[in-house]
Length: 170
Image (cartoon, rainbow, N blue to C red; front, side, top):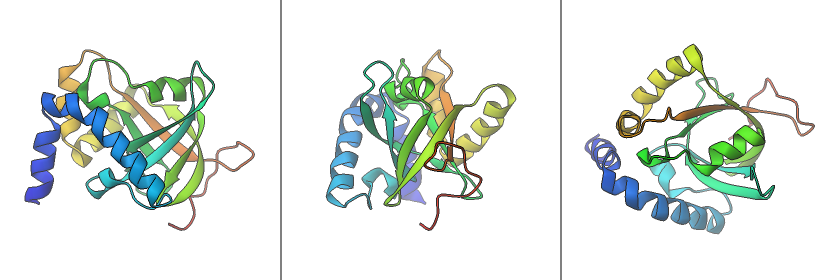
């Protein structure tokens, strides 16, 4: 547990917020590509996905490695637009707002999903779960004036409709 606590402490710092956005996603994308979708380095501490979402302005698919909180029933994922506690919302959140149908790579499987921005009481309840899951989110929120965006991803069938089933075998 000392390793996890140390990583949480380090990831709560401003230095980490400055350096990590330039290093971690690049390493994650490279390792993910080399392992054909089976490994994300950052997922050694937190579960992770590669989100492929359509660019809000460009219309071009954008791939972003992200930490996630899997749903307790295996039917969905929660993504946090913390941007490592930096001032602006990360671009991928604008992409999901503009184009909620996306795809994730989860444990080597490509899963079509639909994203929904959480608000109000629902967001507040999920935020409490997120803080228990990864306490540094509290430090990220304390550093910024914006409300950090939280999305719920649910699997959908290839025709584009939300599915009630999980992502399948992992």
